[in-house]
Amino acid sequence: MFGLCPFHSEKTPSFSVSPDKQIYHCFGCGKGGGVISFIMEIENLSFPEAVAFLARRANMPLPEQEDTRESKKRSHLLALNRDAARFFYEQLHAPAGERAREYMARRGISKTTATNFGLGCAPDEWSALEKAMREKGYTDYELFDAGLIKKGRNGGWYDTFRDRLVFPVIDVRGNVIGFSGRILGENGPKYLNSPETPVFNKGRNLFALNLAKKSKSGYILLTEGNIDVVSLHQAGFDSAVASLGTSLTAEQARLISRYTDRVVIAYDNDAAGQKAAQRAIAILEKLDLKVRVLQMSGAKDPDEFIRLKGPEAFERLIEGSENQTEYLLAQIAKKYDLKTDAQKLDYLREAEELLARRPSAAEREIYCRRIAAEVGISPQVLIGEVDSRRKRILRRAEKTEGRGSPERGSQPAERQLRYDDPASAVAEEGVIRLLYLEPELASSPRLPAPEEFSSPELGHIYAALLRRLREGKAVTADVLGGELESAEVSQLVSILQRPEALASSSRALDDYINRIRERRRAKEQGLDPMQIYQQRKKELENT
Image (cartoon, rainbow, N blue to C red; front, side):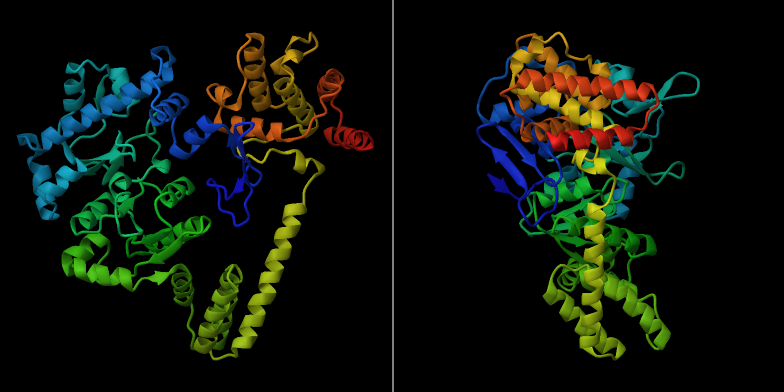
């Protein structure tokens, strides 16, 4: 079965699912695996968590012994984060939270809103959280792994978050995975986020998406700051989210696309915010999301706009927001003085480049006519220029796609993997494919050691496969997913998609092994790998 890939933007289906083989594979981006791998990728879960996710869905009990050290560690970290969030929440309502409550009052954050977001306070003390968590049985090393304490210069420990209004970061499954803190005093950065941990990746999560996913608005409101999000939700705009101290990432965009096909960007009204909006548009467009951009006047951010002008004015701002093409053209126009002919020409060149990359012919024509009227030229002239530029762009893309060394086609589609020696890698893939399809070949005494593989990733796949076969265990893309990285599982599935003549599998295995060792010897002797590759390619073509 074929459909559009959920992992990258495409208009022609290249995502295949084989019910017989119980695998999926995208011929475009290279993603592949089984049902467990799919859940790991789409839900951002570890292997044990994906197994548990599917077991709950199928109402199947999980044997206790299936817990691994990794899954236990993640569960323990999540429990620690939950207890830390409760501690911060309690401190907000204790005497230590007075400054945080005063700050919330100045920003107009109500008690109800604070409760909905689970806001808390990190006391202005060096080790308040550490002491509280120790009393609950957590060790300093566990607190360090969770990013909640840091090591001091003299060997002691101190709290990461001190004298801050604390925003728990909660994922879409309701787990507290990290924290963001707004400084209350003068010392330290304005905002501080948890470091990367086994349960927290700031580039793959969005603040308040756990709440925004329930919104009925039909769009996600993308902002830059936690306070903006809190203020917007309080004002009734319950689809607001924010990235966590980084520009919008491709992973965050894919996360958004799971809940909506419409995004309204409400970034700060300064130069940095406008640049960030343009970067976000480029990322969101790749997923075919419909994007609009707010243009705020008289306020630097959504929080200030709502406090000064009210929710109704912000609603009108959303209704009058520009789509991505209008916004980008307006940003280009700001750079030029359209009263002079030279500046008009510069403006037209940049606008032509933008419009030539728009996929819709109707959209290109509409904006060509609008721009032509602005600068006082014939619409047909501009339409012709844009069409010519678009043809050049498409020709360049075709050449780039077909350009490269002979081994280009031998490189894995998964971009995280690259073969230093494609000639050897093709043979290494062949060994893996034959062992997967003909498990009895695992008893061959000629099989190479994993260290003989030129690709460390293929060597890792081969080692895991060979070990399971020699132990008499089942071999599927799903069970191997417990030992392999997601990119390696994708590459394994890609390898299995290629044809293999099994009528003479033993002979084919010997040929692959000979090529691996021949290539290894050539490398040790310093021979030119490209010449060897060309020679081997001709031999393969002749056979």
